[in-house]
Image 1: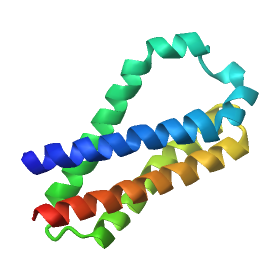
Image 2: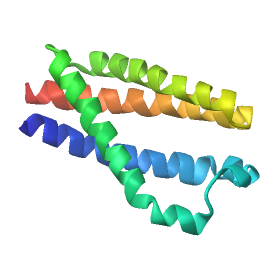
Image 3: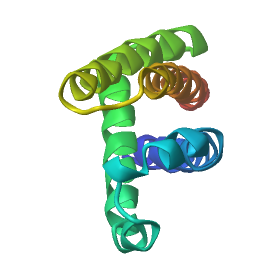
Image 4: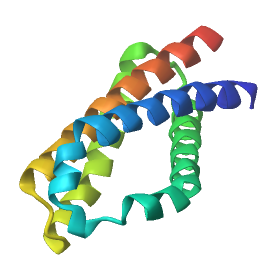
Length: 133
C-alpha cells in the first residue's frame, strides 16, 4: 500500500505538470482556434476539481495495475506498459474525432501527447517500483 501511495503521488505530480504544459501551453492555439467546442475559460475554472479528480483516479489506477501485474518491475517494463496504456487511451481520441468536429492536428497531438506522457509516466513508475522492490 505504501508503494502504491508513493508511486501514485509521484506520477500524479508528473501528470499534472505534463498536462498543464501540453494542453495549457503547447496546444493552446488549437483550443483557441476551435473555441466553439469547449467551455468558456471562466466555466472551466469551476470544473478544475473534476479535472484533478480524473487525473488522480488515472494515476492511482495506472500505478495499481502495473504494481499488481508486474512481478519484476523495471524501467523497460514500465515504459512498455506506458506505451500500451497510451495506445489504449488514444483509441478514445479517435472515437471523439469520429463524432466531434475536431481538427485533425489536434487529434494527432492528443495521440502523440498521450503516448509520450504515459511512456514517461511508465518509465518513472518502473524506476520507482524497481527501487522499492
